[in-house]
Amino acid sequence: MEKTFLMLLVSVLAITTNYSQIKISPEYSYKISEPYKVFDARNKVYLSKGNEVMAVKLDREEILIQKFDSNKPAFIKETKYEKIFPRNYSFEEILEINNKYYLFYSSWDGDAEKEQLFFREINFDKGEFFPESKLLFQVGGKIAGTLMSSGMGFSYAVEDKFDFYQSNDKSKLLIQYRKKPEVKRDTKSYDIIGLRSYDKSLNKLYSNEVTMPYTERRMENLDYQLDSKGNLYMLEKIYHDDSADEKKRKKDEEANYHIELLTVKAGTDKINISKYENANKFVNNLWILDTNKDQLICGGFYSEIAKGKSDYDDIDGVALIKFDSQGKTIYSTFQPISLEIINQYESNRTRRRNEKKERKGDDPQFRNLVFRDMVLNPDGSVVLIGEQNYIINNYIQGVNGSPGGNYYTYHYCNILVTKLKADGSLAWMKKIPKNQMGFKGRGGMSYKYFSANNKHYLVFLDNIKNIDLPLDKEPALHKDEKGGYLTSVKIDDVTGEWSKGAILNSKEVEDFKIYQFSVNGIIQIAKSTFMFEVYKKRKEDVMIKVDLN
Image 1 (cartoon, rainbow, N blue to C red):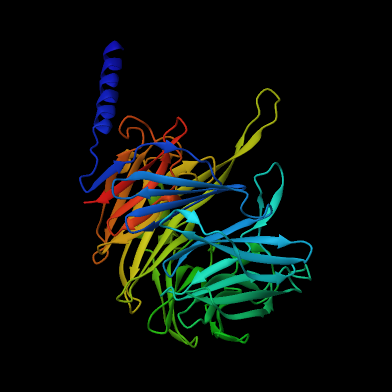
Image 2: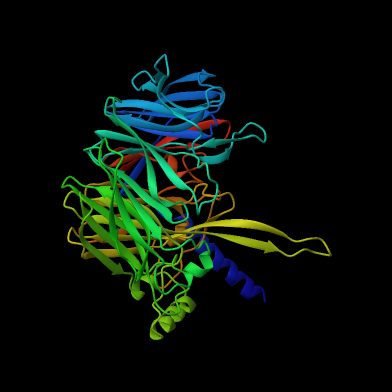
């Protein structure tokens, strides 16, 4: 008994020592700034210019602008503002337009019953706001948005009222909003969409309000895109009836909708409609990119429609549709996800179940795949990235007559990366193993994408056990807020070959641990460099700069 225990102890120590000796990848190096005072904020936006980074942090009445030297890295200065915006303002967006930086916010004028959109320019070099805000436009009546906690007790406010779209060449800006419908029944009401277009100096090009050709129940917006000529494209699902029964739709053996591309030419309010029939496929998560060849690329995921399929949200493959500027379909392609890829990094039980399904003629699907990124390469090829993302409602059984309870866990798992050539054919498809779980929403999970030197990079926190994961093993779990290694996956754009390397151990960054990591805080400052901000306790933050050697 004693001998068995000693052998077990030696084994555990050997495993622990093995993982503690995992080396940081020589492909990456990092530097850390001196600590500076923390500022908690609801919204944080990071911007880069030359050798400096600017952080704009908004916490209702207080706003902080910080400047950093991105070479060292080092904190430079900060400027704090209090009550410079109306009390009822809602932060909308910060954009770089023609080498200038603007903060946009909305404010409801109750007396005039008008929604207003303002902007305030930021002097990047000084890290300061310009003296005055300017009214960009106002809209009679209320517009739709998202009801969010205002951060002031139990009060709520409508935010995200305006959507901002820049053309691919950044020469045009479109601001879109949706009027609140007068008729509340979505089977009777028609969306009224406001469109305001501006040049790169924020001079108005045109202003229209367009009534959609279908009721709210019949339409589901997929994406918007503005081209360099100021034309607007709207990608929509158009349902064939008023059924709102999702369970029924998921059991349909023919799609109860088709895809339409709605085009509004610059300066007009006329809608041109182009139909794309997809009766034999459920097309999901379709996004638009405009190109410099007067063409539109629409990419996303699809599910096959076949007897026995019960959930069109689980994915069979990637879809790509190319339109010309008039809305005519040039081609469409559907590339399936092979069983080989689906079975990678899965348990023996899962692989056997998938193989059994395929023998029965029911192809296994890539479950809970959410479309995350779409990248257009200069040669016309397209890279599409999806991530498994789902929420589980867990129930705890009561003890000794006490009532049970529920809690939610949030999961961000494997990543699927696909490259399609300019003609729509498959270049490569890769499954990147990842298994993240947390209790507070997204937190420090998911990934950040960027590209450099003909490589694609995915950066995320991971369990170190997954560095050299065999194809027949499931990735070990990484729990949010429990440390983890900041990891980079590098994918060659030409071949699709990929490698994984550890950048740093969040529990051993010099002489402290890092907290409150978020992939949203990662900003690419050069082709081969990115930075991010983290909390290090003692009411101090630090900036970390990572170089790809």
